[in-house]
Length: 441
Image (cartoon, rainbow, N blue to C red; front, side, top):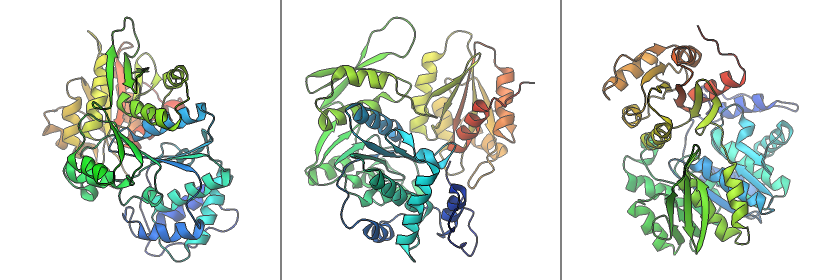
């Protein structure tokens, strides 16, 4: 989950020898006056102290509003199938910070993570870093220590001024551009697209995964002579008729090759863009291997199924674009007599009304969650917000546990329960499921 951002007036002393990961994370949360402070100057100073030159690796940077984690997971898995040694950096995490840094597909150990934190702390001196900036540099240190071939890096926020962008990419995936983080990125797709396209570099190859790229993205790609593959122009996705249950099959047609991909549980546009990237990065990887890898790919918290009778899904869709995709997935599972129960919690700066409108056509019963975290909405505030979107009578609960247990109690075995919205909501719901600590009244 994201950091709490509760910082004391005076930052604490640096953790000493033998400090735990949790002690380091508490320190990271306290050493900078704000949680988000976009800009590359501070990070570049520390980066140059850690690395005299750009690491001699291949860097794949993934930016976009939604679908980044899925694209990272797909690229990482396919590179490993090609025999490459990979590092993957993603954010935020669900259960534990180690999820953010993967070395050859495995979460970083506490020992290696602490060692990376110590290296960044030594290098930064008096330079103030945010929680995310410190963690990003620690990931770079861990990757370099592990001697990897490819670093797959997910942008945290925006692109142009995000800490990940201190390293020049050798390949870029832009998954989508939509409205989110308005206070930092702007309130329209053209402005946001300009920020996200800031990860492009002159002459490098890139792929844009959505059907409608903003002009600002295309203009930057043209100005920098980026070798850009566009969905709908350079490759296409064609749905294949399929009998029986399971996700539909979509055929990716690219470069005179056809690759069959499942239309779920991950957003197929992001997965397809990852495959396009691999066709350029590792052209000898057989199509059959690509199809096999993608068929078994899942990402925690992305339309993740963790329960049956009723079916239980978790999804971190927290903006209208992501909610629209989730609505389509849920709609494909809905049938006569099957009701969908939605446990929903959100942060105050999110477009709650837009999310609810996107989900209203598939959700039968709402259970609203109070989030007692910075920027978290109370259940009562959430009731007021969704009322303006046409949803009334939804009960509010003081915790994810209460809402989740109420939904499970009300749901028939053939129904479906979805826990979605903020990472905080999904993380707690997921932990309750994995711990088998839910009860039904």
